[in-house]
Image (cartoon, rainbow, N blue to C red; front, side, top):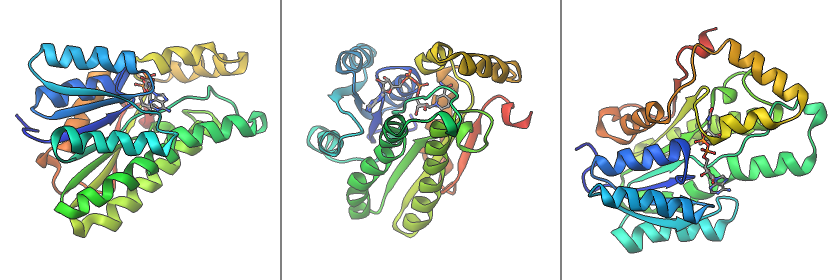
Amino acid sequence: MKLENKVAVVTGAASGMGKSIAELYAREGAKVIVADLNLEGAEAVTEGIIAQGGTAKAVSANVANQEDVDAMIDAAVSEYGTLDILVNNAGIMDGFEAVGDIQDERWDMIFDVNTKGVMRAMRKAIPIFLEKEWGVIINIASTGGLNGAHAGAAYGASKHAVVGLTKNTGYMYAEKGIRCNAIAPGGVATNIASSMQGFNEFGASRTKAVQEVMPRIGRPDEIARVALFLASDESSFVNGTVIVADGGWTAA
Ligand code: NAD
């Protein structure tokens, strides 16, 4: 097993990629804090992991709230004694609005969850990692965080910021044994991806156009396997970078 005795926190783990990552980590021997806004969903994931012989605990956590984030990381320490792996996966999507259509409230909400949520959790986890001179951080960005064509203005900008934050953190703490990388998934079949269709007419037509150049939609487990590589020692020299997992979409 690749993560035996490691302790992991996965945010947004009640559904989609976070759920797949939490389940795969548990199968590989990690003890997992399954954190999500949706406690009921997190508990269902936890029950599934335990039924398969794994170890997990559900925690209700809104990554837009520092107290919740602190309690989520504290839960790893109180429950399992430490923290080794932090996966910042929780995120929300804004459809395909260009900057001219963005409302302040929407912009702030997207940044508060997608970008500041990542910063909040890293800020709380870093002292634990520094103390043991070991730690792994994986941030779920997006191909929309690498180009201008795969997302709306707020979501794209929030994920570009996650990429920048990942590079900076990987660089800043490399000498202290902490690695920080991002994954940029392309279109993956999850709740977020299906809800994209429900936005305004422009968004729906843009979504259709985007999907026409997508080689195929990905599965959450295909992203989870990249997250396993980044969490394990197999990626010991991979730091401060982004792995694109999009089936070739950004090559279009
Ligand atoms: P999903 O909707 O299936 O899962 C997202 C989970 O995050 C949900 O369980 C939700 O309750 C939780 N969540 C939302 N806001 C939260 C908050 N404030 N605090 C805690 N939990 C919160 O979607 P997904 O596609 O699995 O999304 C996971 C990540 O992948 C997101 O960061 C998303 O931006 C990113 N992403 C998705 C795609 C895609 O096509 N699905 C592509 C690129 C990147």
